[in-house]
Amino acid sequence: MTRQWDAVVAGHICLDVTPHFESSEAAPLSEILTPGKLVSMNGVDLSTGGAVPNTGIALSLMGSSTTLMGKVGNDAFGAIVRELAAARGVSDGLIQVDGVQTSYTVVIVPPGTDRIFLHDPGANDTFVAEDVRYDQVAQARLFHFGYPPIMEQMYADSGVQLAQMLQRVKDAGVTTSLDMALPDPNSRAGRADWQTIIQRALPFVDIFLPSLEEILYMLDRPRYQQMVESAGGGDMMDVADIDALPALAQRLHSMGARIVGIKCGKLGFYLSTESAKTVSGIGAAAPADPQAWGDIELFCETYIPERILSTTGSGDSSIAGFLAAMLQGRSAAETVRIACAAGANTARVYDTVSGVETVEQMQSRIAAGWQRNRLDYRGTQWRFDEGEALWMRS
Image 1 (tube, one colour):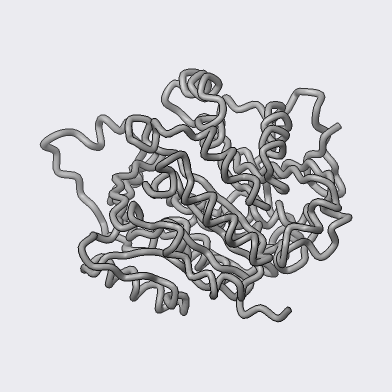
Image 2: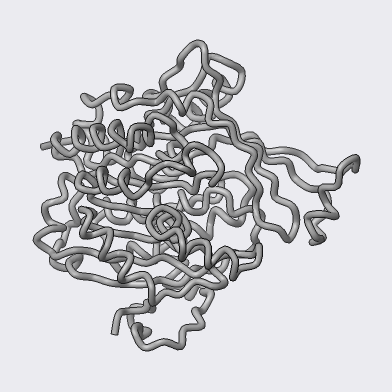
C-alpha cells in the first residue's frame, strides 16, 4: 500500500518564548533572578514548541514526509504558531478553535543553569481522541503522539481517551509511537494515576520513547524521589545508574511496548526491543530488516556539540532522529547513534529546529569521528563494543 506520508506527529503544540541573556557568565540563579532587579537581555526567540512541531518539523527536515496535528486558539500566539509551521510546510493539520488560548512556554535559560519553563497548556487541555483526523493518519506509515501528561483530556479518567486514540490508529495498520513529559508534581497531571494510564496505553504502542526521569516518576516514584534528593537540585543524570535500565524496559515490554527507547539526558540513549517476529509486526513503519532489530539492548553515549546554548527540544529532536533513521531503514545501532546526534545538534542553538541536520549529514559527522561524552561505567552488566562504538549488554 502506498502511503502519502512517512509520519503524522500529533499532540502538544505551543509557542516558545526564549529571551536571550546578555551576559554569558555563569552565576547562581538566586543572583540572576532577584526580586526588583533589572536583568539586561539581548534579543528573544519566538519558535514553535511542544512535541508536535519540535519532533514533526525535525522529522521533515531530516528527510521524512510529515504532517502535524495539534490544536491552537484563534489568537495572536496561534497566528504566530500557524505562520511558523506554514513556513516549514507542515501546517495543514493544525486545528484552530475559538474560545481557548494558544499554549505558550516562556523558556528561561540563565547562563550556567538548566532551563526553567513557565508553561500554560491552553488549547492542548481540550485535545481529545476525536480531534485526530484518522483518514489522514491511515495514509501514513507512522503516528507519533507527544506529551499526554500536559494535555488534560489525555490523562483524565485514567487515560481512556489516549488508549482509544492509539487503538484506533493501530487498527489502521499504522505503527504507533508515544513520547511523554514530566508533569508538575503539584498539578492535576502530577497527581494522576500514571501506572494505570501507561498500562492502558502500551498495548497499542509499538515504540515507547520516554525519558528516564519521566518513566521513573510514573512507575517508580520512590526511586525517582531518591534520585532527586541524591542530585541535590542538580541534574538527575549525575546520579543515574544504567544498570537499572534493562529491568525498567522489561517492565514496559510486559505492559505491551514492542520497542523501548529511554532518553537519559547527557548520558545517552538506551534501546531495548522484543523478538524479531514481534518487531516485524508493528505495522507500516516496521524496520526494513526485523531480524537485525530483534532482542537488542544498546546504550549510546551522547555526542558533544560545538557549543551549548539551550537544551530545549533536544529530547524531541532525539526522538525525531530515532524515528527518521528507522523510517529510512537504518540498523538499530545506526538509529540510536542518529538519535544522540540529533539531540546534540539542537543543544547548539536557542530554538528547536535551526540546528537540525539530515540523517545523512549526521551520519557523515559521526563517521568523521564526532567526539562523544564517554560514560564512566564500572559495572559488569555492560561492555563497550569498539566496532559499533556502543555499549552492549554483557
